[in-house]
Length: 268
Image (cartoon, rainbow, N blue to C red; front, side):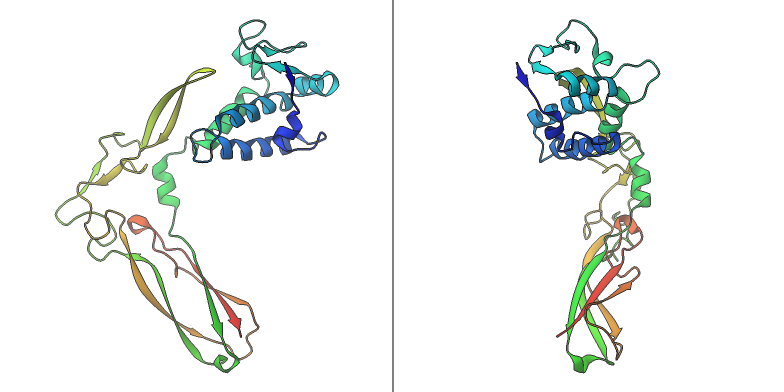
């Protein structure tokens, strides 16, 4: 049996609010979830264990007043024995009799980790190209003149007009996810079988895909290109000045809206 400092595990103070505990848990859960590149299964289980105690007012009060001993056999000193005696799964995760937190928070966390249950197609439609950030260094003699800025960015593919489809072909429904953009994954965990919904890798969550991809842009609808931009430098420009050029950034995939260009001007 070993004693654990749940506050230290989540990196919060002992007087932390419920919101602070939840934010700390979500941040660490995102970072250490086993399905992520930075994942650590042992750390993730420890974080989850700490959250289940500190997110429940009653369990937190017992922990603050008496402490909990934890071993592989489960919680002792009045806690639930998750190994099979004295409480079931939903008891352990906060009960289900008309109270919030516990199981609901667990579901909400997993929903955040795996991108939620929002339709991937909607995410694609709402997205736009990436913003670009450039730095331009000029001398004082350049003030009041026009400068030409050249930079690399993604532009619309002229071969497929940004659609990502080869000529003579069309957009079809994905055969892997049958148009849903989602795939169900089932895995075995310490808590039993767990099913989650992930983005379809074949169509990248769109539900639809080119019957044959454009050979020039590989289906992305955009290609790397050089852009030129003429900037009129004010005579009274201050050092370290930012200019935002709307839609001057990367073109979005599949013809989506372009991001912005942020130009930082510095004077030697």
